Image (cartoon, rainbow, N blue to C red):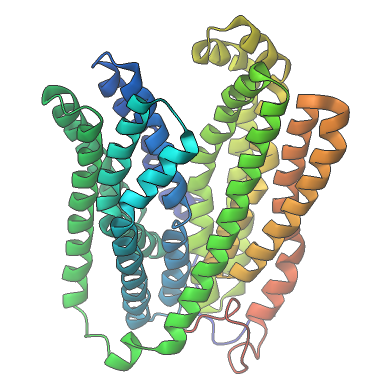
Length: 458
């Protein structure tokens, strides 16, 4: 039942799109950076540099993907503070996230050479490739403190529903990265090192700009009290929230790594075809993430304001938009899939295998959309323990499907198992959503102690 002390606000299509569209544009610019970097290094005419850049970027992305909790965790906590009309809580959430970001970032920067050596050992590539990869990782890790700080800044901005500011900050970061990449990597002939330093400089620029905007805002508001800033319970809640999301991210990465490994067992052609088709899922993800972000802000704000109608309408509307977009993407990939495959590979055997499996790749939009949207809802509500647990359950289902279907149906069975994993992620969270909603909006939810993932502590 809806509590009587709620703070009503309207959830409209305009609000959903106001958040989703700018962030979709921002997310879509990210993969272009890899294309630009590869193109710049490719102009230098040394295949080893291209290989080193690709390997280095893969290792760097693996490390930093696990820290994406700083963005999502901050978004949920700030959105709830907005819903409670608690500016001091917004500040506290950001400062706590920034402290964690800087602490973890400094550790990563110090360990940069160790990550580079570990990456070289893992990749076991030829010396020229290893040298380029080591150079890239060592330099990129220098940016770790500001890169993680950017996660916290973006999380704060999205938690307040300011998607246009988020787009601006991401635009500054990506445009600066492209321009500096061309200047340092190509014009100055720094190669892979130039591409890496371009990322360091652009991350720093974006962090300085974003931090400057936020601190200027904070200066116009009452100062946060010392007790609120150093609230042990609030800080421990953020740590627990981030821990659960990090575990969830590790399991997700393991699932896709297992997909790649199992694909390799079916031969090089199958592995390459799977890699081509996985781009359909990745592209879908960049589009659908915008509506997941809208779900984060709206549901988090509704939880904070204790206004159940906004929560329910936010879930319904983001799901409606998400499924509509997923259907459009599926039709697009089914209609133009063979042409897209031809653009990504010239190998006739890979084209043939990918063509046979096209429907599996195209349907990932529809089977994955619920998982994207439910992640958004649970991040906004800060129900991180449920996200962690359901991801582990879904992974167990996925592993069982791999054993059962992979042996019987080969590569098609592998794709069927992946679809089962995506569906399990979304449906498991959807199944427990009604119970969590009742707990969050029950009339005594505010007056009784509840688990940390069900009630904000800041």
